[in-house]
Image (cartoon, rainbow, N blue to C red; front, side, top):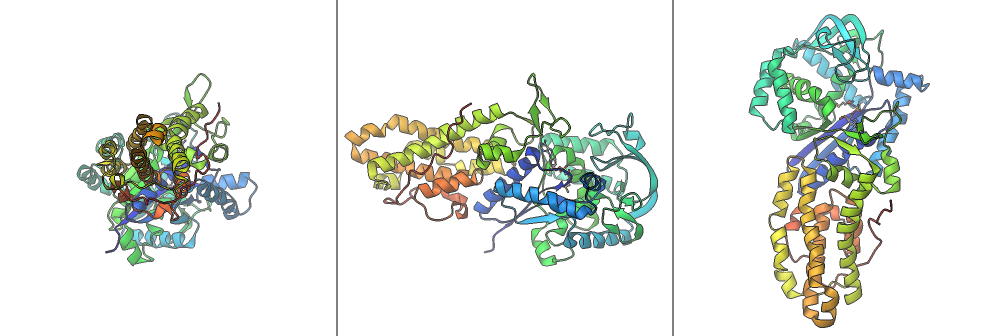
Length: 519
Ligand code: MSP
């Protein structure tokens, strides 16, 4: 039987600046889900990439002294690719909006929608925010400032092409009513639902005159215009899997199962995007999840937005170099519920890593391996009672664990999934204290075999359960535990099985995975 598919995406990052922890957040979360779904037996297609057209990129390229905008994009895109490598992001496809597979399909889509009369030419008068690449009507604007980011707007008056979005307002409202899980978290769903219910949607301006912006995809119906960057970028979610190009593959992959986005770009994904795919006769994506923002602490403890001008950008590369990719991955997913804002501070970071990874997880790994080395010359002991039934205390925590994790992961509640796994880790550490193997070593050898077998087996389960979250350290610990294969190729259901680890398997004490960080 062929595997069920799972298609997930991240936003396409603008290449006007280097990536920071905000960008890393989305890709770490998406990667964790991708790894988890692979281990659950899905055929995963994980797409990420870069958004390379528009005024903002053109300006950034000029400022950096590049004549050719594409060369500027080529330079910045490398920084994203390097960062994803550093963070172990296991994407299956990376799309750049300047690739011909994307540009050619966007042109075909424009022609198709133009022929269907979903696109028309009209006068445009209104405001434009270049940092957000967003058009605003006069009614939406106060004091010439962008309603989203508060920065000054540019007034424009020109002929442009429009997409008949307003025609589909009732369809969208109906769709939302019938699909209450289309937008998560619930607060974001409510926000969009009441917006659509209470406001009249305007048609979306989808072009820019070439004389003002040349860095974009030319529209097939007018040599004087290029495509609006958002219209171009959203389409990546169908151009990459092969729409109008590799129909078989596309049919298998679409609709996307999850679009991961930040809360600031929700309207594009929850209003315009489903209408665009509907116009093309396609099903809307299954879920759009809008996560919160990472802010940084400023003096006095208040939270502040990260920005280049304030010089308070947290560079993920520095964090990874100083600590590790897994430490950053774990912190971001454990510290803040996915969907809410979080404040990044190095103190909180250190505290979380020390308490959860160095103490709880690290200790379990270290003590278990160390005892096998010390009491059994590195060979996992045999205990038929251990293999067959295991200790009842673990049965309790392990039974239903896989289901509890699935319930959390299916709504992208990474924090809850981790909390579930921690129940087992804490129970195992407590077990070591209760059973005091150092006394059993002197007094009761067969009970020691039983206890240590249990611990080795629990460690196997913990490592599989944590593999999607901290892929590098679980791989290392897997080999320390004496396995020769790749932990990431295992099936997640193995956390529900007992008695798998082989007596006699030779372990290695290895290196401490998360040394305690001194403040
Ligand atoms: N290019 C558009 C997206 C097009 S998707 C078809 C864009 N790019 S962006 O580079 O500005 O932002 C990409 C993502 O990074 C957004 O989801 C945004 O929410 C996220 N973040 C940017 N700064 C962030 C934080 N400080 N914290 C968390 N995520 C934030 O928008």
